[in-house]
Image (cartoon, rainbow, N blue to C red; front, side, top):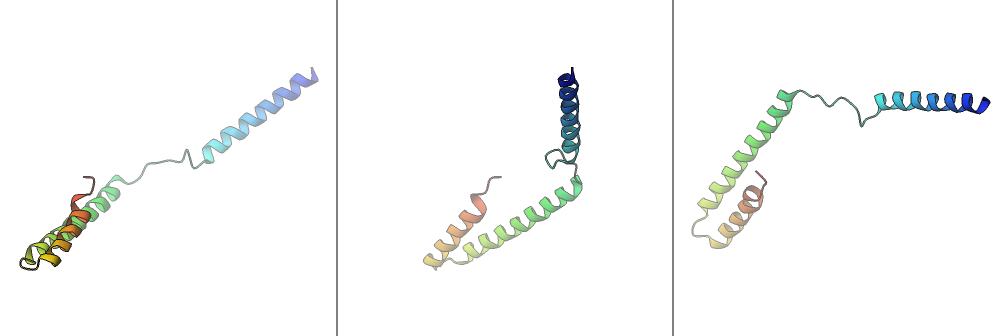
Length: 86
């Protein structure tokens, strides 16, 4: 009888500790964020990326008559702007 009481107390103690730790765990933290803040950040970054790619493309186009530099600019444009997962 003493063992059942001791075992029951031990089980309930472990359950209380586990439930308390689950509330404080980083795995279960509240993931809600400001959606507009994330969207604005992503829009700003993508807008900056588009402007950068346009600039690289214009530079590539302006290097007509300079094949080696133009080829390097084209490779850079392809690597940085066309190979991205969109």
